[in-house]
Image (cartoon, rainbow, N blue to C red; front, side, top):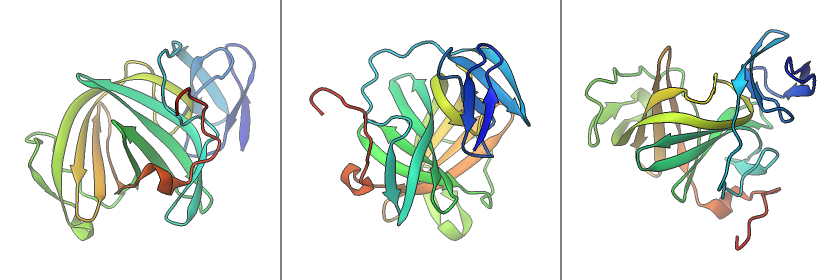
Length: 209
């Protein structure tokens, strides 16, 4: 773990992952970009209201026989709603994303060897070749905007960050997401799983949950 000082308020800002380039100060809510041992404040994150997720920073769970810790979140909005993307670090060193969207739960990881297709022509029903992983079908295409972030993240998740998100499904519960942002394209592959199978611990208390 690396601990740096928030340039806005002086509070400690902890980084668990070397891959994290962005964080939100838990005290003053400043958005911070990490460059080596330096932090630059690039704005502030507004408080979030009506947050009904049971997940929080510090929640732990298991996936594919590996324990994971939640260390960051990016909440994105689109025309019909929003979803949460939780950044996680595993006990075996894997970095992944726990996806929480409309009652569905999935876990995905960066797929570095996939040839990412151009975003032109991406539409529901399109088949995309993911090489050794087989073919995936596009289910949804959404323009999304980051409306909230917390903890530490491997992307510059300032409020207002825009991207095009393409959700795909494969065989036997496989899922994938392609993100087309202003300066980068990324693809993540994983699987959906029932909530109880994650064996979550340290969940946030919610009335009626």
